[in-house]
Amino acid sequence: MPETPTDLRYSSDHRWARLDHAGGLVRVGVTACANTVSCGQGWLFETDIDPSAWDEQVAVLMEVRAHRSLAGA
Image 1 (cartoon, rainbow, N blue to C red):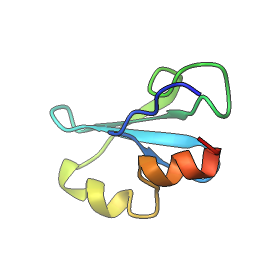
Image 2 (image 1 turned 135 degrees about the horizontal axis):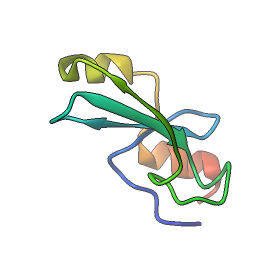
Image 3 (image 1 turned 180 degrees about the horizontal axis):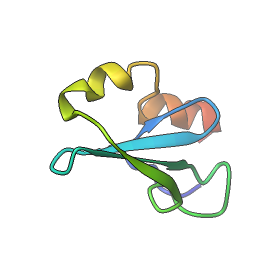
Image 4 (image 1 turned 90 degrees about the vertical axis):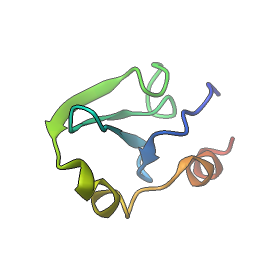
């Protein structure tokens, strides 16, 4: 399994989200568990977000350790 970036937050269906603090954008994609592109590379869309709301918005998503466990890594 490819290295799993630690700055992403993960859903149980292998989607990920990454905040660009400087630009106030969130990039969303799918993990290598769901396709053949490395994590952080196969993104789906970007959307504007208030960076101060990031922690509240991603509270239901997993950090890297939990995602590795889910993925069997």
